[in-house]
Length: 240
Ligand SMILES: [Zn+2]
Image 1: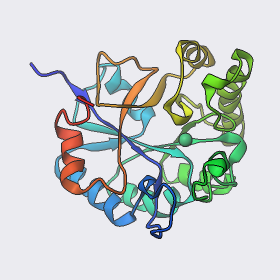
Image 2: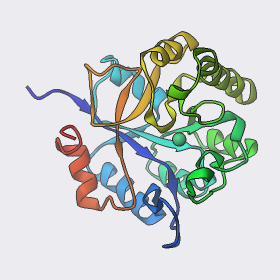
Image 3: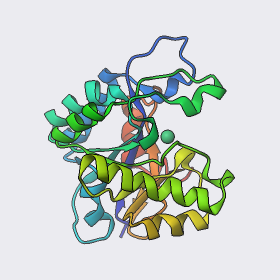
């Protein structure tokens, strides 16, 4: 029997960007995103937020499901991705950097990476009203490995408290900035009360995956339809 696998897709920005864009690969065009959601739908997959995916990850539910995640909270997720997700009755989780709401990806400035607007409070509220979900991506998007235990705890726990306070919903899903963490962060995430945490480790999840360090499948502007299918249906990502 092949192991039951559940792919979790990792997106960032959904926007057609000019050629001059630094790290253009992180921007998937709305047209490509639509084709990808259409393919999932044709194959009989349901795209789910991490909250809705959790019972499948824990083996309580079975079915053809795919997790859909967006890192950082870009405004274009609301403008370009939300209508397409709604069209297919899919949900998704957008991981927010709570101290950067309404700002931009300032943590990338030093690296010269193109800045893009992040959702404001009211835009996040629109995202939630569209039936989509939010998760935590720390207060300021630091490299957790470079912080003291105390500062890491604050970044992980206070993001949850802040988002719950503003949006009045329980925040159960966490995503490590840059996908970087160590064992002590795993404990902090668990103690903060999160149920899932995603990384940038490549692969599809199985029932054996540690729910606090879930692998994901990166989708970039170079993920053409045949590659998208290979990433979901084959061991393409698992071997990497
Ligand atoms: Zn991020």
